[in-house]
Image (tube, rainbow, N blue to C red; front, side, top):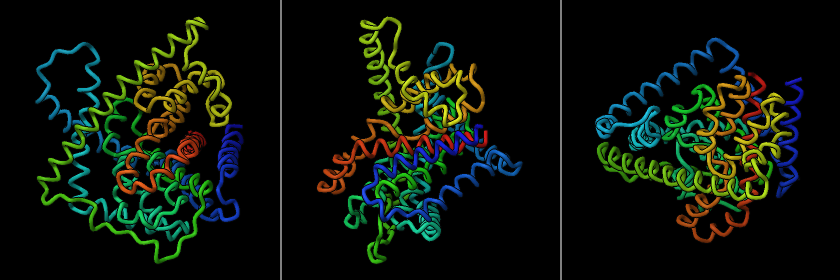
Length: 395
């Protein structure tokens, strides 16, 4: 029964995307089918085979080792503080972003990541028929944040039509940055977060390719990685990475303060009219039907839906913090589905981040992003639902 509901959820998600499509006649069905099969194979391999479990556990162990290294740096700086039981979220979780961002910056300077991303993107383009820029950006979005992923293709922005701009923006919103994966792993199970990374890449490209189909001449489809960084040495890359990571940590901290406080304010206002009712509960009931299709148990679907809804109206960090204490009472399947859903930037604030980034690159194209902002959010939510549903089929 769970498999039937999951397949129905996939059909519903792709059906909604098709209804939103700008050009229904030119949808790349072959490419979408190939990406769906790749999603199923990757998830099956990671969750259902011994080799896959070893691989994902090894990657998780690698991230945990990096977290240990990062923690040493954090303890050196703030180890003298006396904190209450459970520690301080900013110290224990967010400051790890500084170390992870530094590693990514160094790997970028050494051209290790750009070269890897280019070749994987090229292979994906040949396999699916997607343009190279869109494929490159899809893979790039696994490693870098929304702004950084778009900036990496700034030299190709003049080639992007509105539909192509939609696809690269959707990839940026539908994925997460590797620089904050270490922070996520501190809160939720590592295996589900790591599986979500490739699933989200495919889901974002699939949904965006249905909503905004493209056909691109070869001369307008080149990827240039020669100017992905302005760093002149490894030490400059380390310094810039640390500064960027510190900025991200402070931004996330500021957003958490604002969103959590605002959520409390909204709940207080709601309870002036409906005693005991919260925004999270309302969102839980709204998302319950799709939660059931995704594979969440009926007895857990309201709570799970409230967490997913919280992520959409605030951000993934707020939702993860609320989800942590609930995991003890939930099944492993629900934990996996919700964790995969939360591992993306699909929320209202991301529209502004992407529009601001595009404006900094090409002010004329920023108007296009603002115009399809809500469609971008809906597409990204559909992509998160698709990834979580695929994961649920194998849990």
